[in-house]
Image (cartoon, rainbow, N blue to C red; front, side, top):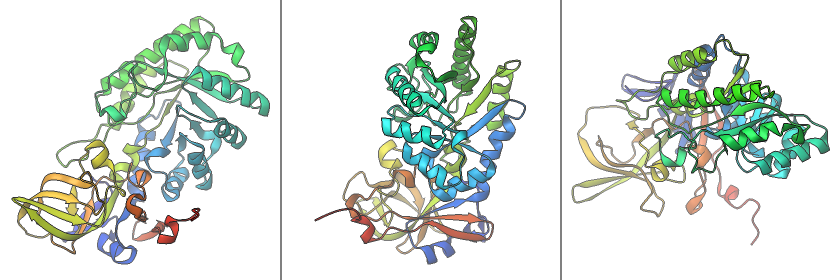
Length: 417
């Protein structure tokens, strides 16, 4: 079973919904990211259904995939948005998202970003330090705004995920220690006109252990109870991101339905609005990166398949040592080889797969790098002066380019000799 949603094989050829990937590659070229509208909508709806009966808002985490076409699909589906920069807010607005249903997270908001967010009508902020809280207070007073604010507390929970995407331990830069947060809530009067009516946490990404989420939720609820006893009423509870997803065929993604059930049980009888910020689990399995094999070379027993996509297009394998299935777009009987799938960038770290048993791929063949809908294009760069790839959105039997492939002229836009 492929770790993809919205994709299937028909007579050996790989399709996204009702469009053959060969058709897209022939007209759009490679490398190209391809996303399934149906899968994105379905994954968003899974969270909405799982939390039915609990007052909630689902804010899609824009950092996972910020393409306007993807944001537009989610805005029309009813999603709110979670942003970590003013640039992401600008994208949300351009895509038709509602700033009032947007939460501004992130550890290093500048004064200019705070001003832009307040003037745009952003409904809520998650603050991660006392200094940020003071900066937001001053800007809100100057602009006569009264935003809802949650302190992001650090629950000191080990989510047992990759160290780069673990965020809930006291050693991490994120959040405020529980004890200090409690003191800041008690001092809420000095932060007027801010409404300190929320509590937030985020323990990391690619988490499958529901007990870790429930442990964090338990700590937040205990804090909310202590604040209530001290006369501080909390209206909203932000539990952070969504569940982990499978990148390999023999693995399973986390159960959104079970996650929702456990949250509903924990919040029963409480007058709280729940906020979640899933990103990867909405778009990750809904996308592939199309690439074409250029050459083969062999060093001893190891084969190198050289393709036209590189670490500048998809950096996850190099940055996180992450696994992405690599699938021939046209399946046929063939031998297996053992080797690496590598790109043209002049770095030994430029690989999409390493020490992998794979079909015997020949030059000219089209490949799909699976589960590339999240943290793919958003992390792309122009390293080695390579133009960034195109992006395509498929809906049923129709497809359209939602981001044109960069040109050489794009590489030097804004530069001066």
